[in-house]
Image 1 (cartoon, one colour):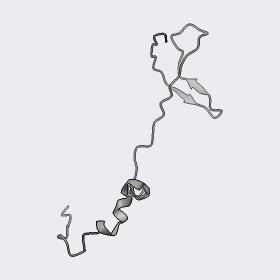
Image 2 (spheres, helix red, strand yellow; image 1 turned 135 degrees about the horizontal axis):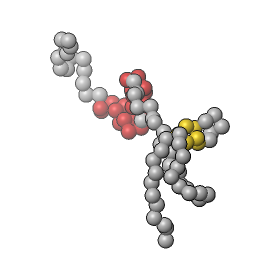
Image 3 (cartoon, rainbow, N blue to C red; image 1 turned 90 degrees about the horizontal axis):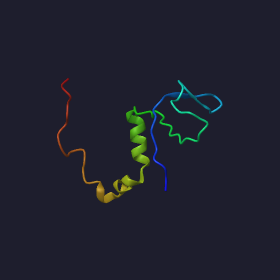
Image 4 (cartoon, rainbow, N blue to C red; image 1 turned 90 degrees about the vertical axis):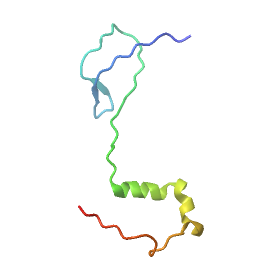
Length: 84
């Protein structure tokens, strides 16, 4: 049976030697073993070119290469002009 756990949130930095250096002290009397979860900010701003490259390389869209999917021509629809 696993013991109950308590979460403590703090911040820190990963240094050049790949060590975690906390910004402050922890409210724990030690020595004791702990389990650590590292949350790293992800790059969330993906530009349109990166998005299009990722979509083009994704096998989920492979069906679009089939000739049967090419059902539109340049004469279909109307031109769109942005009036901003």
